[in-house]
Length: 232
Image 1 (cartoon, helix red, strand yellow):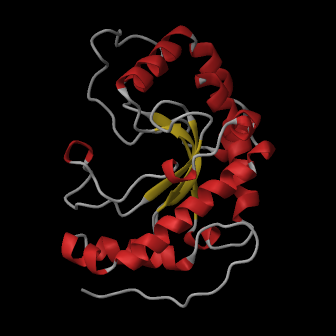
Image 2: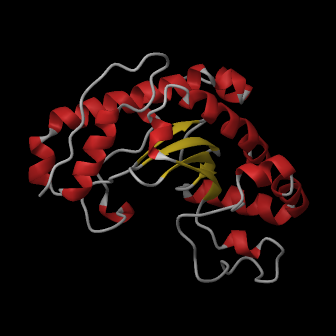
């Protein structure tokens, strides 16, 4: 299989995405098998250290977009998705995820709505979400959607929110029908089909390699904070 390489260089300022991390993710996508992954543990460990550093940076700057996150205890090694996919959570045929989400949450990424940076060559974005909720967290989201549709509408129709997140609410996994406990005629029916949801702002790969990425993320997260407050 072909390999992708790039030259290591120092990135000044806050720790964000290193070019070697993009290289590893791209190569993993081309070689998504255990034998290759075992041969490239050093690159994997470097990428994981990078994700830990990004999580620390997102928390360190959180007073500029969400004081609840700033006041919470930082858990950097628990703040990004892991490479290995459990069979029940597997997306695609590979053993490993070839993308990573780094989170900034006041709670847990599977329990609480929060902010994220999605790192995937050719498909990078950032926003606020709870894309893989636990059953109890999903139930809480659904109750809010049914009980306060006006509050959600206020968030989604805010001009700044609409400009930053033109797709509105998005999901990574949608059901074919509304769960039986809800009505298909409910104003929130389209969202009740979503097994996790959020908002996203698309980013170019070069954006993630820019020294000023943190400033761009702060503005994205600040705009998304209204959605976080709605769900929390």
